[in-house]
Length: 453
View 1 (cartoon, rainbow, N blue to C red):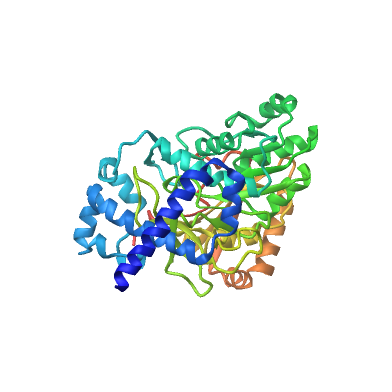
View 2 (spheres, rainbow, N blue to C red):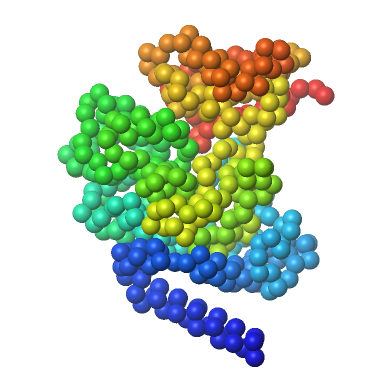
């Protein structure tokens, strides 16, 4: 009787949610927004659990890759109700590079995108047109919460080369029925001259590109903006504050990966972490430190073409369970990304990561947004080689002095070890645009690999 009662409740809730989404919510972004505000944590967990069980059964039937993985780990996908029950089973970026796409495909693909990442070989991820449409619905709710309305005028400067972010962004703006133009990633000075007459009040693009446009606008003049939206790269708070001060508007950031179809989380107006897409993804943090920071792992639970089970993002973050205080209170958040697993380097300078270096660089005048630190060993001790891009006219001697002062003040143990000659430092300066050879720049690199043991 208990099992029958549970099954009846399960079917009633499923039918109600499916009918609500199909008949009412999908036709109205304001209604979807209102419904999202009222989602209870219990209902979010319930939806996530049901969808996880469905995708486990689905890939067990459709995907050769996961059938083999389940066999190897002696897992019955019909009996798994929580990702933690999968133990050591993960999907990695190397899996996507090594195995042909057919090993993962569960349905007919209609489009594909590639991830450039911080390695030489790209990964290909496949989707359907319907999945783009469904993603645009959820994305439109997030933009509605940021204040976007049909009367707004939007321009996208995202790079369209093999990348899904601009495609999904354009689908979202079309769903919102905004006037919009796809400018793509043209030179910022050309962009500035060509968009003046359009009266755009929302601009979207990658942080490094938006920064260059802002420096041009600071000299030539700005126009009224509702907000600026960025994604595809990390951005320091110092850079955000500069862009906001020039345009006199808010800059909102998103976090995503192509493997997750672009959006894993987006900031709300409070700008206090990324609200996660909990009804489409199940996140986990593995190997957390004492602060809760570890590697983000996620399972896609609504995709049909190429779903992923426990995909290792290689990004270091933590889940924030405390309510944000905004209208999306029930939705959990991810903290700002601190770095990548492959960018955590143990050396004479300590255990360094992009977050560690950003604390050193914060507040230094004349620095551009792109930088890299390489750990080398030209002698018997490690060398931390700072490779920094400078703004035009920056004083290199002043930058070097500020760098050392920041290390002494903000990373005192590191400064002590430097004075003990446990490692050396050098500083190399470049014009803007030299360091970035691809969409993503690897921030901390270990170049000691070619040393003889």
